Length: 182
Image 1 (cartoon, one colour):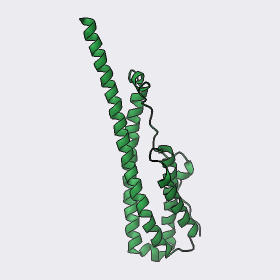
Image 2 (cartoon, one colour; image 1 turned 120 degrees about the vertical axis):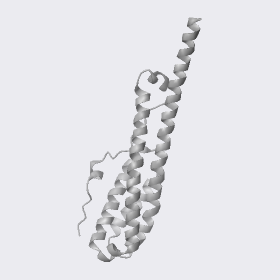
Image 3 (cartoon, one colour; image 1 turned 180 degrees about the horizontal axis):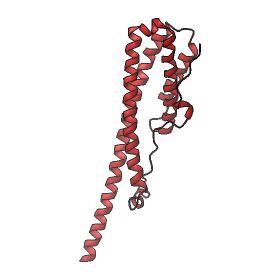
Image 4 (tube, helix red, strand yellow; image 1 turned 90 degrees about the horizontal axis):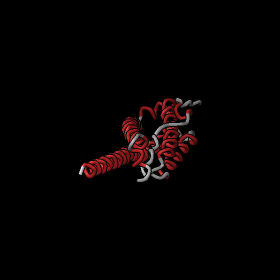
């Protein structure tokens, strides 16, 4: 009788651990979805920004093409490629920084209401991307702790739970403030 009770407690404990792992994985996936939504909003805004800048800075074609190419590359990556998306989005952020630095050299562009509104929208979205990234990284951390810690690591491996990648910038050049020379 006592053996049966102990067996039942162990089984319930294993179910509790498994359900905790499932919950952590779902929270991580929901958090990634939040990042994906914000990155999509940013990607949708970029073509409008490029069109506005084109009329004022046509000879800055290289910067415009770089932003477009990086936007397209970011959108072409698979949704689950956290490391690839982080690297590409970091490069895109740097290219957008160059684009906004160009506005300083073109007072008419800087004064353009449409450009100003697009810039404010993009800055707002960037803030939301940062919040979503922090939430995702927290969810990934929680899942990773459960996957690696005792005794849940004995359940995680056989049931296919793996560590989640963090959404972070790994290239130091992407962290640097863009330099624009005229």
